[in-house]
Length: 389
Figure 1 (tube, rainbow, N blue to C red):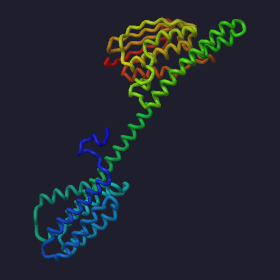
Figure 2 (cartoon, rainbow, N blue to C red; figure 1 turned 120 degrees about the vertical axis):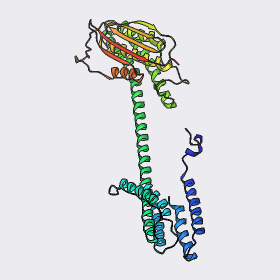
Figure 3 (cartoon, one colour; figure 1 turned 90 degrees about the vertical axis):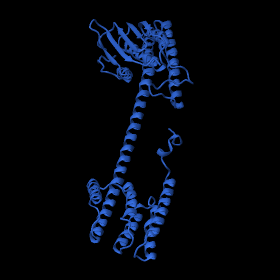
Figure 4 (tube, rainbow, N blue to C red; figure 1 turned 180 degrees about the vertical axis):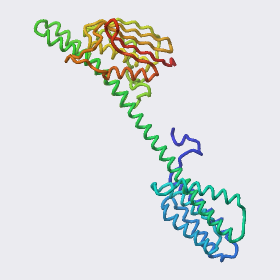
């Protein structure tokens, strides 16, 4: 929210305005103490003390410690000389800024000071007036308690602001981390699928280049088509990032750019998988979906089919997508080996593809499972709710 749109009482004031308020408070305080400085004390001396106590408060934000020392010194002299005295009120006003700006020092027991000051102020209010001598001592003790309360209050406000700053930084860091994760997941889904098809067809082209040049030429055409499609998706993603229109729920959905892939793109996905030796049977039962839900569904199916291409081709794959307006169901099964084996012969752990699918499902508060089927093959299952609006 823009600062100008906030209510007047909760807007953050600029430093210049805060100093202006201090100037007004200092002038008002000096005027009141000068007018009320009657009694047996010499008028000139009392007015001088009032001015020396009040006017420095105007620059308490510029030089907190010097202003506090000066005001405290004048207030102490006023008490010792039996001049009209402010019970260290001006010094407490200056001390608040010191407590708010000075670095924390562990050896100062701020909590103890605040607790004792509160007890003294409460006890002074309950005790009532006494003799002249007792009133002098009580006034001094009460003045020190006011100083202690001002210090404790300033420290408490400083600590609260520090905690708010830390929370804001943590929130910003978490948002940046989530954004990086979404971008990495989207890049992985775009690149992994296309590169898997390209790698498979490139291997075919190498093996049949001499014996069956026409088949090698077909493989090169598939590589060209797949790489062009991948480049188009990459340009779309980078265009969204440059435009700064990345939404909270998915990193690719910008109305002013080409539409993000959705369920309408699943037949084309099946055709590309067929080029790599994986026959995909589609069973899609879903009406109109929100763009981010359609994109997430497409990416989950895309990654599941990509895993079949990488680890099980040639194979048959069945994709079932069903949405009832409130909950999405995705099932991708194949008849390849249940245990995925990499080209080098090693069985892979849970790679970025499965992690990315799980993250997309968890983002909606759903459930995700992936693993070998009891009767052979591999199965990916995702269930998540969504808002149809």
